[in-house]
Image (cartoon, rainbow, N blue to C red; front, side, top):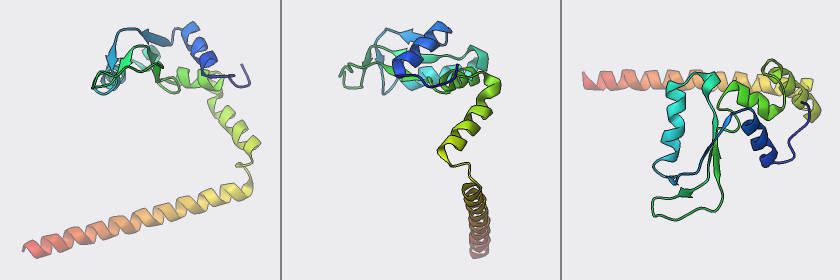
Length: 145
């Protein structure tokens, strides 16, 4: 399953072949109905049951029609869908990411070092921000007394 999809259509075809694409032909309002409908599956279905959606008759709140279908969840509605997007098995997801990182050069020691430095700075910033927030809270309490 290695390689890449030539385009989005090819990816959607694979999702459909694996029963992971649910096509909705009924008119749907993108502003009020689309995302709440998609969100329902994340609140009530087990991950294995989740699917990507393709809405084929989309309008907005003013009744304007859209000529292109809208897809949602085609990249990561579930771990299985994510693996299909990477053209690998679920167990190979991390391996595919490491391969991509190594091919792009971002896996070099220098870049890893930058990542560690960035994370260190980010944690230091977060600690200082929390400290300041705590001081502000204490100052508010003192002012209230």
